[in-house]
Length: 125
Image 1 (cartoon, rainbow, N blue to C red):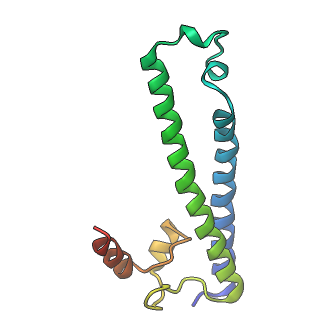
Image 2 (cartoon, one colour):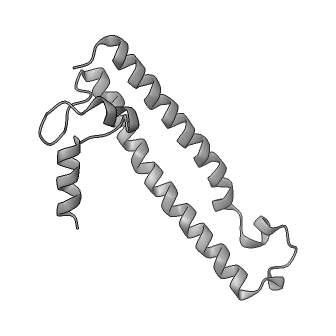
Image 3 (cartoon, rainbow, N blue to C red):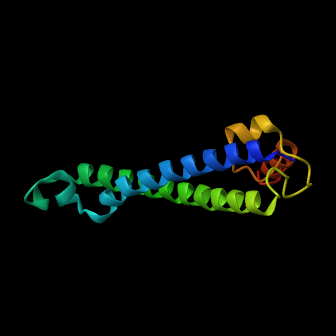
């Protein structure tokens, strides 16, 4: 397991990532609440070409998908922060082995070790 100094490092890293995602959510939220007419600054929605409306709709859908994925990451971050408090941080949820520190450096909210993650992805294909 990790000493208190490393746990504090991962805690601050997780909080930094969480704050960054929340800031992005605030920026994206504005795009979700505006209509096509409002977001373009046009006075009439009739001046839009159908292709422009389709492109805007596609971009909104992509933004929504990314926001949904970021929401999942936020859940994983909260779980990781709870695990730090409980002294369970860094253990693979599937096999219980300590997750490689290089993996945790890249994804401090990782739930699975590399072997279990590879197995999960192979199974989900």
